[in-house]
Length: 289
Image (cartoon, rainbow, N blue to C red; front, side, top):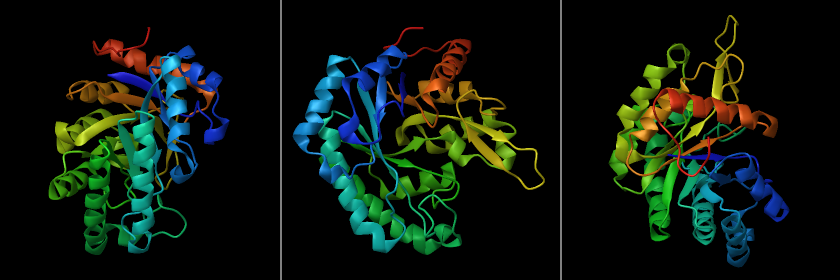
């Protein structure tokens, strides 16, 4: 396994400096996610290659490139989402990034990650599958893995549903980027370890591209409410050792990328992950203790 981080690099491509890249290694990570907000069409191939050269000079790998606001369940958004995949894969090639992560989308006009009853309809699934099949073909032509960021509010609301859709599409370079917190429910967050093991088992080893690490808490409220927190933060109910055991059992040297946290919390999150790895007899390649 390799350990990466996100949110150390600025989210605007032109603002990324060699100092930002150097900080990845200074904080003890092997690589970084590339999660800029720029439209990938505005990033030239040569500028992307120059960014890659800077990363190489600092011995920093690029773990993943996220374009999370694609929408493959809304037919009106399909063409733009496919354009985003095509341009993202071009940039990913230039920066030597193996995995492009995309979102599923939603019918909720407030945002692509918010719930809507139609997200779970047969019609949405029927729109999603051909869109993902075409997106996966674009990624495969570019030599990239296309990974799906799933969520309980989206059409791919659980591991079993995601596995069924991947099997129907049948493209080996289309996978799930496992983020266990995104699939937590009131029942499973109370015993997150078995739930996480179940996610790995349901998906199967050939359908997982890597994993994200973050935490989650269950609030003491009369209506069920969960909050996302940083890995190992106060009240974190996620069994991080279970995440690592599942990831380590997969073929290849896959990435665990810690996400959604302030820079000040990164050392503590890293320590949580390393402690969970040590307790399970596991280790990461390319980093010190």
